[in-house]
Image (cartoon, rainbow, N blue to C red):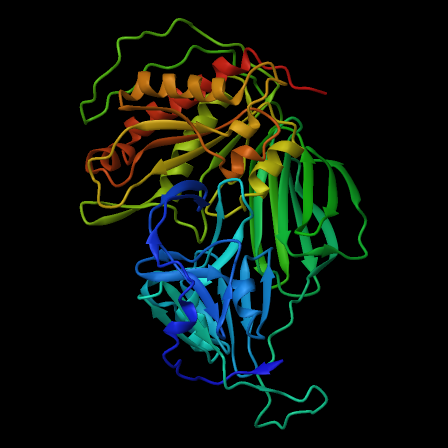
Length: 521
């Protein structure tokens, strides 16, 4: 491995006479769960006097460049690791190493915590329809591991230099003073014990133990059949049974499984009343469930009347042409956009910060309640402030054989507070009629009902290859309720009344669509 030292690039403009000057280029990029139009400068990349041709050009944010991490830093002899479970990036040189996470401006340099300047954070970015690349702030990493980076504005190039490096002797053991920091190995926790205790006639506590620290976990509930699910990121199953029969207190059994991303513990039960999942120690999680003695299934109901909003909005003249929809055993998967360390878009109201991830969860919970009160089965990709990946969300819907998938988001645009309105997207690549209807029809039904209740500006049904909708095997849509950067709409979307209107429209659009859907075997 090369040993890096900082050097200053001499004037080498003549080397780049064949490089196209930096120019504004329009690209359709997909990141943070949505599609963006990029109109920024496009630079050439020159590493150690060699012109590179990476799969994705540098992307400029806040006058700072993000570059594809592996293609750039492996070129200068650094080691690059990407840990998918935790979305962690490691860049390791002989003298230093950097650890970062996607969409997080906190980095660790040789184990010391620091902030990435200008809030230019690592991102997963792809051209629409292209390969997703891990993009990182080039100057921050380069200077941290001992490289020199310069922007040559005349020739439109980003220059990265590790000249002056020396090849270390592969067979020589460095002295303690010269030894490079060794990155911490990735420790895979193994589930070593799963036990349960019946605490009363309707309650069960399940205890899950691993042989090392649990770094991250998520939980959610599913219907048809009912179950509570715990996923431990990066974990594997040890010497434990894959099925534990309980048959008490409404719990039938506990099932275990794993894959390359996580270990999963599933509590199968009936008539769930409530549940709680708590990490009680570094390697122990307790799942507490309480069931009801019986379940009363509500009769199908007509959609509730819209609740008035304190901000007057125009209302289309089109009236509903239906009165009620029958309940269905077909599963609806709802996806509250963003979550956890990914706040999504950011707005401001009366000096207070408003986060997209909170609004989407609030509205999605309302949609869930409306659908369940009408007798429908609903599953959610997140129930709290967690961050399922853009792969995990549609995978959940596919594994559950859902009838429809709907992702809920809040729009934003910089320096354009007048932008407003509601739009719904679907992926053209996932618009077949195998289910008896199409994603386009689902998106149209949702938009029409949202406009009826909300009276917002109609921005139309649009196509975009969003990661969550294009990977679904069933009709899927992504709804943008309004603009968090619009003063009126951010106010509306923080009120109970307007959230209820949005939720009612989304729920009714789903119920209309379900009348035409037949889920393939």
